[in-house]
Image (cartoon, rainbow, N blue to C red; front, side):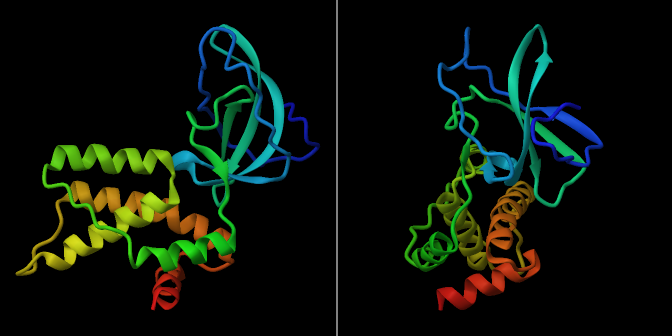
Length: 194
């Protein structure tokens, strides 16, 4: 491995998650800094470990090596010419942004979709996007729906799995930024929301 950072990432295996922007790339270059943290779609918070030239398929390009926080055995490669919106790359939320989101979540509109296939599609899109506001809304919607069920009924398994995926993604970012354990994130959210 030849990362341009002078730092090792402790890799067991790698995964190419690069996005091809078409012939010749996107025309723009991501400007990530080695050592910074970014939120990368469903992978959550990742540390930028380095940058290197890699060949995947028949083309050689420059890639950023990203390591998901808490998963030191994984390294993801992101082409430097990837479109940040297409690959769902964004800055990690600040503490202030998190607190604002929590306060806003009380007034967020709940949008339950009755059709299970459509609901799964919408919820899966929210998870892929990594949009923290929409993840909050989705989790509130599912929590509200669960509370509406009577007689000990549970949500369908697909909704439970989507809830778990959204919770894992959102809570890992909040845990990282706030410096608390993931298991304590819900209690933190409830204490701020009240």
